[in-house]
Image (cartoon, helix red, strand yellow):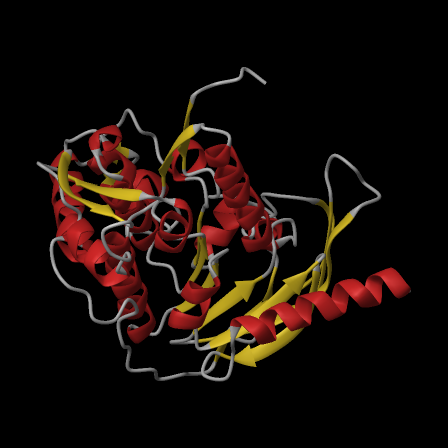
Length: 356
């Protein structure tokens, strides 16, 4: 509308599904034909490779390299090596999977939109999580994935919520976030900057925020203990920082995400709901987050991963549920799943909904 000559886009597809992202990228190519210059900032290598004439890799505030498509074709492995400073042979670290007993059962779960009481967001959802298992929820944007996770976490989203939750075979009622935490459930939000972290506070303050009683005596915080547990968490999950007193705002996206994970790991949960755990971070930081997820699973934790990136879901999950328009429309083992199989479940459900 402003007839601009230069358009700068910062992670423009972060909240888009693959189809909408492709439309936006094709639009950039149309702009290019009209003589407009676009600068695309993205961690999604397939997107920059698709539209860019040149790719510049920046790491730690410095230009590492610039690649020109007209000189030779882009190589994703070379881009990754420039981004992280080393080669990554496998983007998804291997894990020794030992699946235990069922830890979480959700049956006939229904949730209505709090702003539109007649609109059902979650429609008769039934899922199970086992100890030591990483389970994925895949689906298009707007399918109800985040709303489902938040409704489980102390009914922090929705109204007229009905259904049954069992933890280790025992029915529980999680009507508040505190009750969810007390029942060893943690929810890592998809929006770390707004809902997950207090950016102006230190790593230490953010780490202990959800479990202050663990560092308190008669409701008085023990500062030495708070420092120590924060240092231990930084060491455990590999957060790169000058000290635990550093403000979270000064950290990279990947290290902010580690602080957010550390905050909830400190609550000692048995069940973790991870909503877009690698959104907006580079490929090296993603690998480190996947490693942390694997460690948690090997400790016997049950992990539910919500992600818009199908390769991520396929790469780290033992089992996958497909969610479409608030309903579970498919379930498959990670070893047998594919992007085509997931999309087929979604498309068939949408067709069925239209014909009915």
